[in-house]
Amino acid sequence: MVRLYGPPGGDIIPFHAAAALLAADRCRIPLVEIAREAAVRQPPGRRINPEKEGGALELRVGLGHDTHRLGGSGPIMIGGVSVTFDRGAIGHSDADVLLHAVADALLGAAGLGDIGQWFPDTDPANSGKDSSEMLATLWAEVRAQGWSLLNLDAVVFAQRPKIAPYRRAIQCRVAEILGVNPDQVSVKGKTGEGVGPIGREEAIAAECVALLSREDYPSREE
Ligand SMILES: [Zn+2]
Image (cartoon, rainbow, N blue to C red; front, side, top):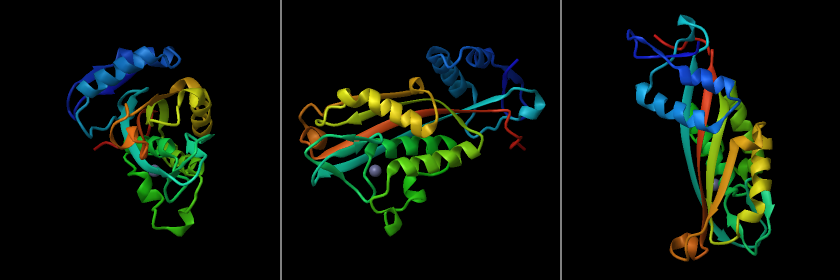
């Protein structure tokens, strides 16, 4: 039996959907149901105490967003993949907008701040830095807290370049960096419909949500 626990002093809440998750081999539909139910039943900031009964599961969601100006010469790095384009993204590091959004989603879910705190753009050591390296380093920090990735879903906003031809390569590269299966990583492209800074090709942006889980982690309650 897998259980999540209610408020301190409250009743134990059976959480059969969590057991379904563990048996379903990362089926996406149970994950959505679990996330929704967990959001309803878990008070903010509450901690699970697996020592009360074995097999507790903690879930956290994180959101990441990033924007970079377009300029200079291409190619442009998107999701750890070099994408052919006549311009690049302007930034202190390699300006990989998608990997920065992914990093912030993972850090946000784990309550570990944001990428700017870990790799300040005022530090010359981060100039031109490979964002794949940064993400791998940050993901190791998140995993050290006991977290695993259930799934992430990301959107790249760009009038150009088109994301679709690179979608599978980006999905596989992000999964490779995080050491997860590609089916746990979803990447979509959206244009700016010709309006705004995205539509005028002045900027590229990305958003990402990530769902993390932690099982049987040592008690952090009371
Ligand atoms: Zn960035």
